[in-house]
Image (cartoon, rainbow, N blue to C red; front, side):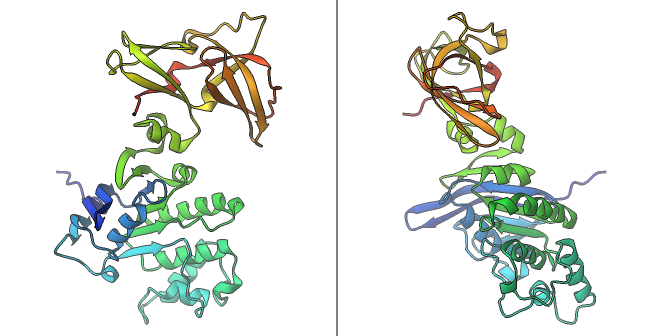
Length: 362
């Protein structure tokens, strides 16, 4: 008989209020050993408060938290933070300036523990800091300090690691490499990881699962691919990329637009909807004597538009158009250099399977 083990971290319907303000509202999460979950959302949405309650430095008003199926905190019972076997990494790294690198990494290990120095040396080697043991934090770069903080957090082999915006203080050129190295080490250590970030790129790069948070609640949760390609609403789509919006009314389960009719299943006749299109899903063709291109059925109807402006962004070009029909301004991205002059007439098409139809919020 196969008995499934409980998740490493289980957060059940936790809520936190400050006066009349509900900062965290019924948040639930489960994270398995070796899994990285990103709590993603804008500043002030309750991410860090959730992290603090799991760590034990703040108390929830309702709900409970379990580790490996064992209760560590509800509104009556509370295991102290130092006994939760939870590691913490913050944005400022919080290294002890008066301790060497080796002493910082060894800080959470009991003195006299067998293999203490071996564990420190192994972790420093794993984060590419062999030979840095005698140095002090002020002698290190930001990226090196971040790796020391990671080694220190992992030294006691915590069952759970909480990371609060740990890469935001680093030079942008260093971030991707350090993120990849960090992710490899986290997977190797098999801790359950909850990473708080406001950067969609970071969440997509590191997470096995993303929990998208807004206004104290988790509004959508799932694998990065699913979150990106099946957003729950317009705001969720916009959090991951720029979007274009076409508005219209539903008649006979259809919405008329410059690109022809769109299906609007689940939306009653007369209701107002928004059709969301990402800039990379607009296809561009030159105006051929007013006849336009020959779109495939998946592309729907071609819409004529005029270039407003174009900019080269390095890896791609961003072109803004004004639709002849309706006058909406739409943005399209094109790989490499594509800089048509303002006033140039072109045709736009969009794949229907790349669009999202949401009810319009008043």
